[in-house]
Image (cartoon, rainbow, N blue to C red; front, side, top):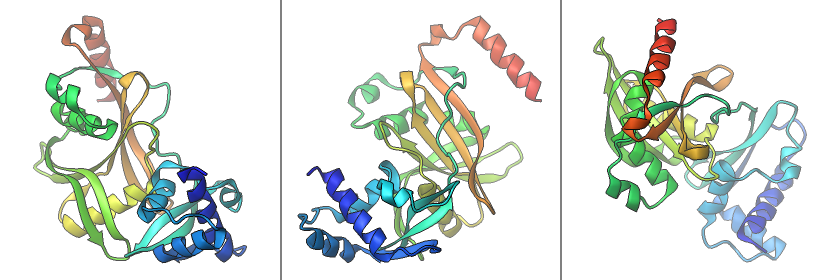
Length: 267
């Protein structure tokens, strides 16, 4: 049995052992993963954190769990404190980049050695954002990378991690904090991470305006950038743009005229 199949069997058993119609939250603790693995006769996963992480951010929950959600809803796994988690019924709101948007060409300023030796899709994406100032370009704010892979503890959530934190200032002198979640490969931008980023900013940077950002590698190495906003109905996409890093000579005069006309039309 593969790791993912073991993970699915354990998480499914936990859910159905506690689920009752009408419930919108179901809490569980990390030690229960070991208990239900033994109950199922499955070897206990070496990395229990990876089991939960997998269903929070990478993989769909088992079909029987998804079927227990109502129309337009989805079950999520949210942190609930140290080594504690909860299944939560939430609106099913897409947060990933859309297909079909025309990417804007940007001359690639990524140093060759960095591009050559980046160790993962996520690291490569973060490097491209940084060296090409794509967060500045997308937000219209002068931004600076403050820290990457910020790990901290948030009350009622436990330990959380943000891929990179930018701070910025605009022409009015207003200050902002931009938590960035970067996704490559099959990983997906997840509402739980955006909620955690918002909570981290409220805790660590209470005087700054928080503008959470998602970054995703798409086909043909197009980079999708999305800014999110928190509303009474959940987290939604505020703005979205796609960028393609190219050699400088590939940005044509026609491209420049088109971008200028598009920008002028928005003024």
